[in-house]
Length: 267
Image (cartoon, rainbow, N blue to C red):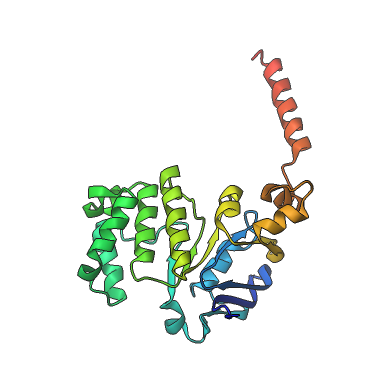
């Protein structure tokens, strides 16, 4: 049996801000050719882990390894494998989309002319059209997101890290991105993404990790979800069981209060 190449390892990662622990003793790995979804409520530590894994933040304790290279001790070696799509695109507003891509290509020491056909295919897939040559300051949030995706893919990374995979994208673009990631998986590319859309994780991910209050509380495959929930339930059933579901009683109290106030006002 051929052993799997490990693309990404979180090794007992802890991050403390001003005495408050955002992430506590977090362990996880992503193998080559695997798609992993990291889920959790707002404030659970997902984005902190994304930033630590890309070297933007330094862990208080522990380390992250990218294809065996420490992100804290060997950041240059580690980062060459990574394509990162943050929740909010890091782009230069005064430049055009194409100029932003050219800048990233120069940083990676790529001759963009050799990647022109590939770039134009991505532009077509994500429906950027002539906006590619317009200033980014004229872009919608969705167009900036598409640009960030192209910038993350242009150097052929072996590890994609995507914070909030569906953020600002229309349904067609989300579907296109899912097809791209599935195809890259077959080429050995590893992907770690976060999302609040549980259905996306359930369909796209090979493995799902749930984090709550900075700690990993569950890890498994979509098949494991069906095995662990009553009557073969779905991810949302397990997720709500572990992290807490909607506060139905409080919601009903709010609606009753609103109705009562409306009646007193003759509405």
